[in-house]
Image 1: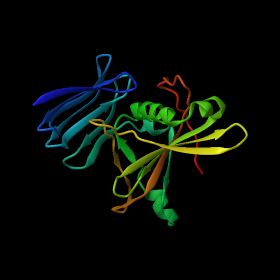
Image 2 (image 1 turned 180 degrees about the vertical axis):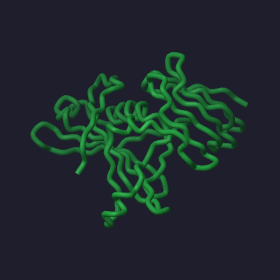
Image 3 (image 1 turned 180 degrees about the horizontal axis):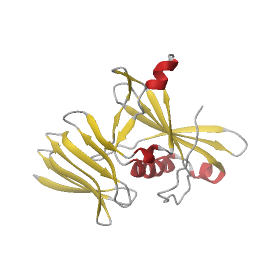
Length: 210
């Protein structure tokens, strides 16, 4: 069994174990001595209860991988996001559950903003409309996810850049949108600010998506 560490852009550190190059054992994310995530791997797969905490040390999410159920979620942390479910049936859209990252929403906002910033050209960072930057997670019905950042340059030109968030031992699982036992493709949006010195953990804000 080998011990490993991995640094994340928000200053937090992943501590994890591997056996024969597979994640196995305790997995934690800590920042300034506070725990942001805790769970266990077995032969490369997450098992049992996983706990995720906000930057102010409050429980944000508890998820059980054996049962595939959310046991606790701090719904107020989802208030800054908007969701689009891909279905032609309005009643299904009304009933469909919100796609949820199995992660601290607060830390997700920060890390996604940091990853998006790294993909935007420096010249665009200087001239983009800071009030119109949207980060989108596209979650498929099979829980596969891709990420993109959408922004508008001064003058009205729209730009879209894709970016990666999962890397090495770091991965965010998503629970897809569900209605009546069926899963649906969906998008999870939030507004943020991008700058060359991005580092504000509260840089997102509320918005409505139509």
